[in-house]
Length: 67
Image (cartoon, rainbow, N blue to C red; front, side, top):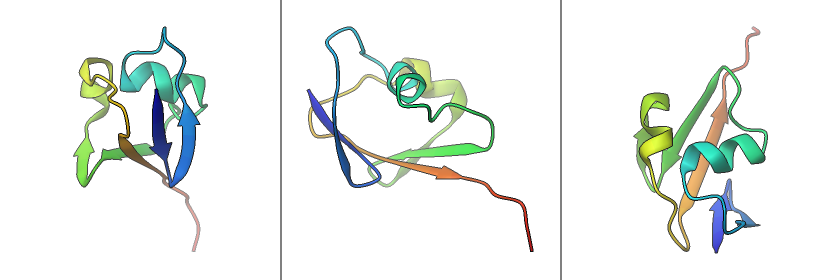
């Protein structure tokens, strides 16, 4: 299955079925991360219950402190 993460195509292994699993494998599951699928923010508590679908568009945003 192919999904897009921040406009980058990512081939997903067959054993990865949820958003949480994908983000963990891609190193995007750390603190300070926000994730949207399509144009809808997905709360961290729902990542494990969000199934992956072919062509899914995922945006990962990392909060950064600074001035």
